[in-house]
Image (cartoon, rainbow, N blue to C red; front, top):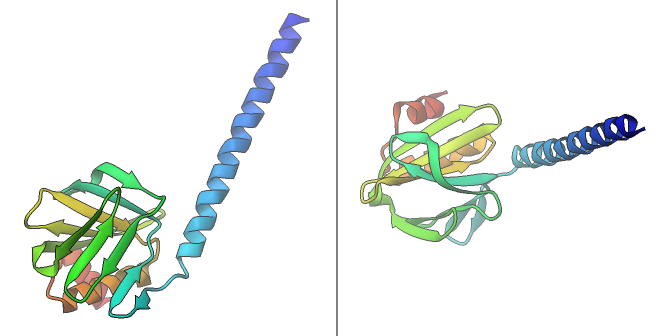
Length: 156
């Protein structure tokens, strides 16, 4: 009888684990679908970019990060500066941006901001190619240098 109890226990554990992963998958998928229809929100002179997640990483290595947040990430384009948040809110002038890059892979559409006065970079996942294009276009209008990938996105 002990063998039967062990089998039932293992099957129940596998079933619960499968249900957990299914719920997590559906939650993430619903957030991504909702993000695909969001646009830049203009408030006064500032433009708030809706993000699914944000990451802090090192310049030139966009896929390795040292902090991330999907709870309250933010990217706000003010007339004179960029305000962004992964863990802590930071503000930098547009002159401090050394490069704006764009990367896309499965489920992510990232805007990468590298800064001349820092070794770190900011990566914001918009999950929306059109939104990323609009943000990169606004950054280019502010005089931020673009990477070849970002330039190709604007030309497309």
